[in-house]
Length: 46
Image (cartoon, rainbow, N blue to C red):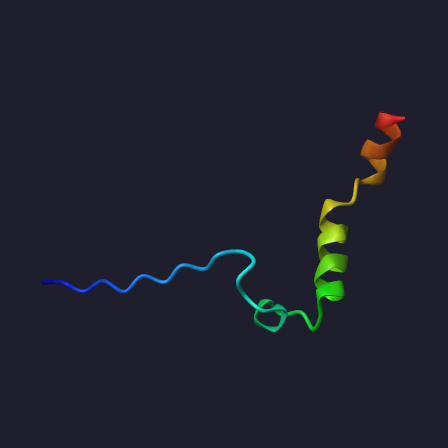
């Protein structure tokens, strides 16, 4: 019989420190930078 070790990481279960952030606020700031609408697209929406 073969034993298989399988490690799965699920988003939301790791600590902020494990993800490389010192706080929830720091993580949220980085996420907001990623989802911010770029100025050239914002002009097209108006």
